[in-house]
Amino acid sequence: MKLVMGNKNYSSWSLRPWLAMSHAGIAFEEEPVRLFTPEFAPHVAKYSKARHVPILVDGELKIWDSLAICEYLAEKFPEKNLWPKDAAKRAEARSVAAEMHSGFSPLRVNLPMNIRASLPTTRWTHVVQRDIDRVIEIWTGLRERHAADGPFLFGEFSIADAFYAPVVTRFHTYQVKLPALAQAYADHIRSLPAMQKWIAGANTERDFLVSQEPYRHVPDFADPIMVTGGH
Image (cartoon, rainbow, N blue to C red):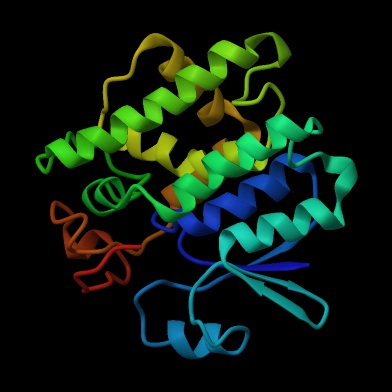
């Protein structure tokens, strides 16, 4: 299998299935594509007319969208228990993953994933805080209920944890103050060997988005991406 994916520093959507597979020990190869470059769209279009990453390639099959990919992985590798075994837990895990997948737009837009940076945000609004509060509510409530079963949202690792991992990086980058239980969960996710590998990869990348990292000096980077968007 192959995962077509964007820059590790910026691509929150790519991190989700990458972490699910890496933590679960599912073998795959990476095919990185640089975001916001002329070659991105034609390269990705070879696999999906949606022209978005990530895309999972399994033989002749191409699956795009991070949630669809993770659902496929859960079905293909049932022994990895990527969703909780208990039906009620599984339904709730799908609900919180889907909530992250389809919601939290103010958080995404105002606190874009940028692993290399440490930036106390100047773009804080009440709608961003509302999203932050909701994430804290989810993490705290689940950890309180499932602490006896393990350190993840539902005790054992699941796709739900993979979907909130990019938010963990955002809270770290923008120095969001978290209550103790939520902070302990975030620290645990960052400490995972797979997450440490992703973070190390992000730190080696030389691309940067001028809109996200205006403090960078262009000569310090081999090939800056001079665009105004985020991912």
